Amino acid sequence: MQISLNSASLQNWTGNVLLVGLLEGNLEEQLSHLEKLCDGLLIKRLEKQEFSAKPGDFASFNFLKGNPEKLILIGLGKPQNLQLDDLRVGVSKGIRSGVEDKGSLGILFPWEPFDASAAAKAIGESARLSLFKDLRFRSEPDPQPMPEKIELIGFPESANFALDEIHPICSGVELARELVGAPPNSLTPIVLAEKALLLAEEYDLHAKVLELKDCEKKGMGAYLAVAKGSDLLPKFIHLTYKPKGEVIRRIALVGKGLTFDSGGYNLKVGASQIDLMKFDMGGSAAVIGAARAIGEMRPEGTEVHFIIAACENMINGSAVHPGDIIQASNGKTIEINNTDAEGRLTLADALVYACELNPDAIVDLATLTGACVIALGDEIAGLWTESDQLANDLKVASDSAGEGLWRMPLPNSYREGLKSMLADIKNTGPRQGGSITAALFLKEFVKDSIQWAHIDIAGTVWSEKDRGVNSAGATGYGVRTLVNWINSLSI
Ligand code: BES
Ligand code: MN
Ligand code: ZN
Image (cartoon, rainbow, N blue to C red; front, top):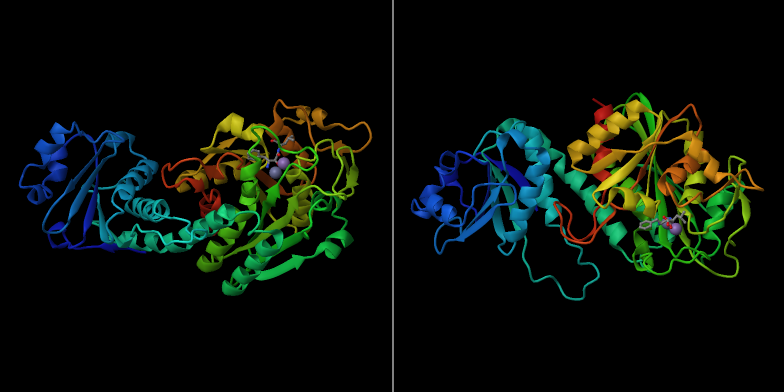
């Protein structure tokens, strides 16, 4: 699907479907050029349908002859309240209703956007991501055609460079969605590592996969305890993007990579969504998706490490017992009082490994706790960090990406809940504040001198229904925030 600016005036535009975003207020002025398409009856028809361009208002007209064949109108609300996300949501709603037509789809905003480049990027991203479909596991092709071409009409030439970012970023998001959406019998730790290696080859990234033996040598007892119950070998994946020229800063992105989480002997039962636990590698998918985008965009000055301790949390005769005490690669001993709190164990050794690279900042993404879903729902991920600067920069990046993110507290007093009678620490605290103690557990494995942020994406990794740019299923959450953040460092 090609997304471009079209500088032709509306009269000369010859596409099939025209999607128009309208603001509340002077509808007549905004629609003056479109009236010709509707024999001057457009305003009248809209009045009949009580369309006044409030957020969520929607109207669509088919024409028997001429171009366009279909006109879709979406309401965006009051101009003074307008946010980038209103454009994304409006475009996704409109475009989903227009996909039965292939050919060319035009998007027109008959008013001056506040920031034409940011608006063009948001609209283009929304169009592409809203139309994404994962058909890999169907035996029949999809009968519904897609538009081949999407044209943004009436934007200034200066918005063109913003469109260049759409392809690498959306390809990264789509890759993440495919990784998360793949079932656990198809996306195993081995396959994840193979895909990472192929990506590295394609985008000129350095690649290293540590095998079981290598991880044993490094003393990664926390990560390997989780992997023990599976017939599949763990794969510790490390990709590196090295910029051309001087390295001004080094960043490490760490993603939780559980290709399936059964809970282990603390087996997931009842409403614990065991059937969805293929998405427990959503953090690693975001990190690999970001690697795909960064590898193509090649920002200057920033070296980026992508780190994933991939494995499965399963049950067999050698699986870890509830109550086992193990030792992580920084020497800390951990009493595993709950085998279902496995993500933090894999991340512990991954964070120790990341710290050894001496980065300026580490950001980890993980589907870590059900408690985070209870606190923030499925539209907002939780952010834990002691660095106000990092919190601020990530918030700015997530806002411009349209990905919800909310900073949560990291009180040292809650560390009490992780005290073990026998070991240095236990892996699970009390139920209350469970996403906070999870973050505090991770903090034990990060050097104090390194800025670190943890993002819990347990809620945002998956969407039950079509919402905004997310189609039901894997969202690819995190790719856009990470890429925006890394790119913002390079400016
Ligand atoms: N992968 C889960 C977290 C999760 C739960 C993600 C629901 C998405 C939806 C994680 O490994 C887990 O099982 N966490 C436990 C921790 C508990 C045992 C302290 C949880 O949240 O219940
Ligand atoms: Mn678990
Ligand atoms: Zn898990």
